[in-house]
Length: 391
Image (tube, rainbow, N blue to C red):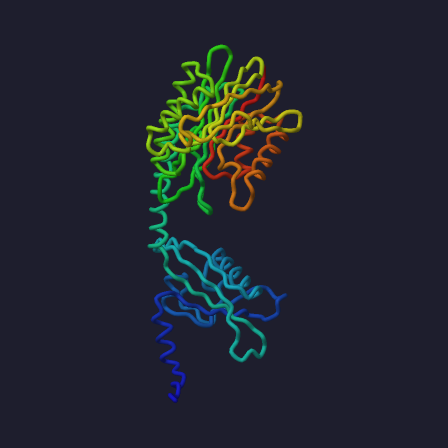
């Protein structure tokens, strides 16, 4: 059995001195928790002068070594660790040398444990290269996000100049933990992920002769540039058909034929409504899409008729038109599944929640209501339209 080497103070000091980061050991001047917080430095290495801003300070307190502001920061950090016994990490910037330093403070028990006094160990590492890389990466991600949101909105078409009773929103998926970017002229956020956050959800609003307004939402399978390109073609085709005065069922029938010849368009879901803004009469048809919601007088209902298969999913499918009458003051919501679908809840629960928000917001302006829906039901890829019937 090998006998372990005897402690060597010189070796310990050499190892401490050659650490690639700053090290310090601070002792609270009093073990009485009611006493004012004060810590003196009992061990340190040379690197601590660079990484932690400490000079030759063995036996001296933070207040004796630093400015009043810096001493207060260090004392509060050490006191937090001393009282909680928990390791704490934070990053601070040192103007001298333009360094970003990651500070790790942790509790250290006295070896003999005689008086219960605890020390606080501090490790200080220069993470400037890492933070610089992160800043560069975030700038690039923000640039890509701006490109993505601009591209998506260009494909979706303009949303300014909509009728006063209509609000439109599109918001791509925001990865969990990512910051959000608000696109120019279009409320909502976009995740700053490493790729362009574009997808296949779309909406459109088309003013038609005879006091009519067409509302359209759809969802192409996929969340990439290819899906966005397909979405743009389908939206444009639908707009042309609507401007030719085709009804919702006829529009979807023509889109079936188009989707059969457009790679990647198979199984796209689309909901098309034409609202007679004077009477409240609504003609609609659905290609496998979630039902529109109609809220009025504190309740809501689903417009669930006229449902057929997704585009091109069933060759020769006959599209059946449906109709409804909505009263003055009623609110319609058209949306894609990202607004209501979650891994941790049933789809029906999400639709119910959207209906409840809609029903409780009769007096809320449509623009505010659209934003409220995005807040209350944090979405994945989502396109939505809100229409308030004001004859």
